[in-house]
Length: 322
Image (cartoon, rainbow, N blue to C red; front, side, top):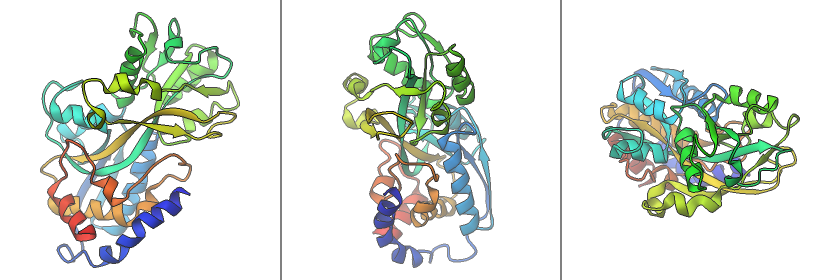
């Protein structure tokens, strides 16, 4: 269904895209493109690998390297320190960085190539646990993900929105996904929070033992949005479909848009080339196991919130879509 929808969304653009290369119609841009993604087994990394493949195929003079990191916060800092040319980040983290709030002490100069897909925030407990709500985590241990991940920042906010004080009411650990899965199996962690597509391999790997249940999160949205307004929070209600993991029912959770970011000084031809790859090869940028991502139609791509589009991306979108 997802691939069919993508084909419909992008099919009308292909004819325009084929004729849109007049400005960079030679052999295309050249140079190094380091793509900051996330943990090796995560959705960011899977998307980054597919993006690198498509960029290299479309623009052979571009040398792509996929960088693994702890996640959104680390990726923004990689951009800031010139350790990467482009990076993936949750929209709420990107917006915080751009405005100099949250984990960032001052505004970070950022531009966006596009809004590329939606992360599904998934808070899983053992299937045999009596925990049914986020508030029910009181007195338990939860892994919120790597310290420099966007999930860790959002996880802290989720706990507080549920009336829990991290470190006092609930014991918080910051584990990488494989470590969190092992801790869930051996019972040293009662819950783990991850964000990505659906299904996520780290959770699918827990299907058989010990089995998982996803906690509903969408009910916390009003508190999470407080003071930001609906459009300013970067968060929205989404649904994890029934059967996404063995025996799990449909669950109302939280979606967070992801942005493909760069610095303002990324060369315009490179930004334009990346944008063309996103539009032309949308169906090839969806990891094969992904059921729950909403992806890469032009109207969504340009919806980057407070982070402005890079001028090269603007040029490409105008050429491709008017």
